[in-house]
Length: 191
Length: 202
Image (cartoon, rainbow over all chains, first blue to last red; front, side, top):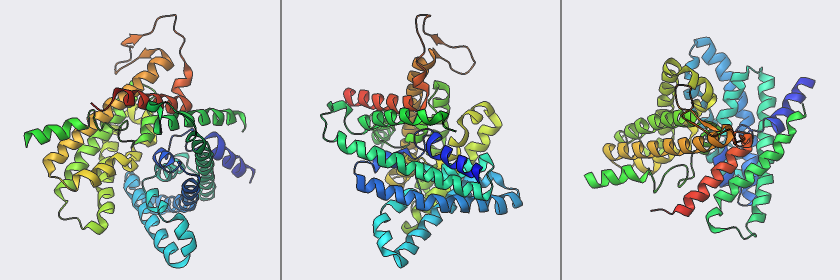
């Protein structure tokens, strides 16, 4: 139990998926201009990442390992993730329309969010058990959401500032992300 | 024909060079550019996949039903990524270890899906090949440049394959380790984008 807690803390803060492992940066810059879209994206990532983490673990353990075809990891994981996203989208549309209208446009974007695929691959590389894989996926997703929402808050402020022309938009966004990454580095001594 | 071929090829080198002009494929750009060698290695691997996936998508563009096209593109891309992964494991094992999970992650690099959807699905195989080659070389140059800047400031050296540095800062220079850590990657890319904006599109 204690181990799982330590794992979760280290996944959220120390190995933050965005700022320390550099995964999922395209949607990070794309959806962080407004707080609303950032929250939508964060929710969608949390929702999909946990399911993808569990599902890819099962596929790897019971399908790829039994058949001894682990080199097909890349192909099978991306297919699992793409079909999962499609399935979740159809399911939400039918049964929970309120949640669907909230997450709606962010769901298809998740297929090419490398955070999802990246977490699945990290779980396999670290050799986590099923429970650990689920906890790690959830914690990574929380860390992603945290960084995204923090960044969106700062970016809304930057809109009001007078930024020199060549630095505008993505450029200043990346430099801001760098400064947030410095603050996340200071979590290193925590665990 | 030859003119448009040259145009499609050269646009990837400057006017639409990823990831500076098209802000796509940022994750490997930030993660593997600690040294110029890693940057170029990653760029070449991505370029290889890009050229072949562009070619195949373009050849099959009239056969793939538009409703399932994204899934088809992903399968094509994933196949070439697996090929690259196995090739690198066989021939450039040290580089394979350094790049780690970022090789399988080429599959979710938005440049590949972006070029398949925006270009290869609408143009002939030869034009798509030129586009893929141009974009691939542009991406390699960009990654190499960013890797070079970060390596010079962070380590004070510039090392290509072979081990001995081809360029070294003098003893007066104190390496600025910030540049090779995570925050440095973001700041360096941000400043590069700013530089590209200053230079203009021409």
